[in-house]
Image (cartoon, rainbow, N blue to C red; front, side, top):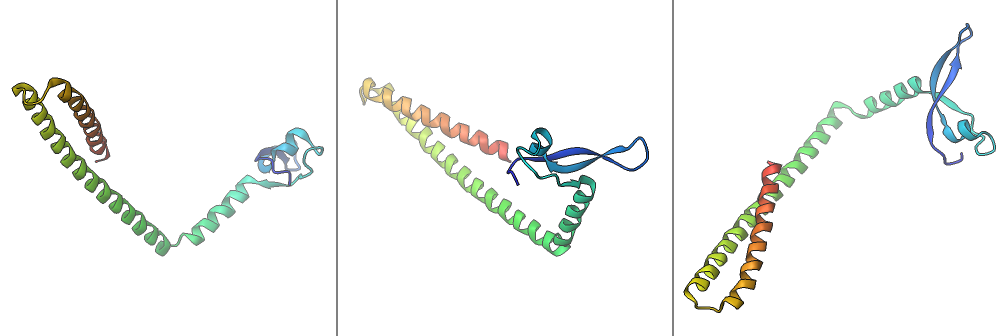
Length: 144
């Protein structure tokens, strides 16, 4: 009624002394702050409520429905794995290209065909790309 939280309220139960406490689901704001905040005094026994909820779930989750849910989950996992494998192949191809460009830049630096001040920024860029691709590959290794 008040929009506050529902939680456990231990309520005395039984006619014999001493009475024992039974957990109920109830409005916590009413319990803590009283009628001024919430007038909802309803409490539902947790054990009975939990059993009713579990029975309802059992009715809905028939073997056919569970089988379909498992099939859908496996299909999603398979698709995700296929996507990861495709992405890994792309990263491996990109890494091969970066390594080839690095070799070309080092060769150009060594034989002096290009000025060093032009090659250094390209080398730094390719090295950064290589590090990122290697990190991606390490991530894929963790997924497998």
